[in-house]
Length: 328
Image (cartoon, rainbow, N blue to C red; front, side, top):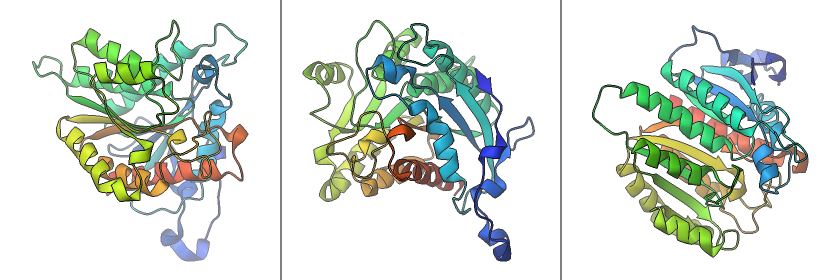
């Protein structure tokens, strides 16, 4: 179910004496309309943790979009000055005790809204919600690209960049937060598209041998979390840039559990080791400055398990960094 934006959620400090230079996000964000300008950042929530429940994770991610907006409200305005709130896609009945939890319907609704935002020239940033958001995000972009390339012989070269402790390539009779990129791979086969997937931050202790084998078979590009420390950042950057060079349109997703649990406790599956925020932001900068990014999302924020809103504030920082870089 797609719900219109609730602008009462946007609150924050007002520094009236500072004038426009003292503005914060809650003072400039507006509800989306048919007249929203091309190039605006469009925030779209995915209030769902049905995929997490199916994956036997800690539920609570459906509260993620509200928590991110709350943290974004006080974000100072810098490069990004045009922001619209596109509301939320809400997964009805998302509960571990409900067989018909509405996950697939929510993913398709999210996909449809994203495709519409892209068609109007907006830059969407998805606010999750479980990482089942990824299947909806990719489908939204794929729908847009199919419409854009209609009548042309060119096959879109889409690249998926995922900062994540997990491949999320699991097999399963039902979709979950652990299956979206395997589903995307199957979707690419059905479309006749190559599957180009780069997963950075993978933990050898959070992925089975079967998942590593599947990643190898699918031609996935990856780096382990232990190979992404400060001393390896240039090597990681080279891996990422080589991947970017081979694609034209990029979907960028950050699963917040790629960060260490010490700084990101509010997720469904906290990382024991993780990748430092400094590295995550450096990679984010490379992706956003590539000129190829079409949409992005952040996933797995679970406010139920957050400490002092620490995780929500980091998620908001990443969203704002993407927005500022895209505006610049």
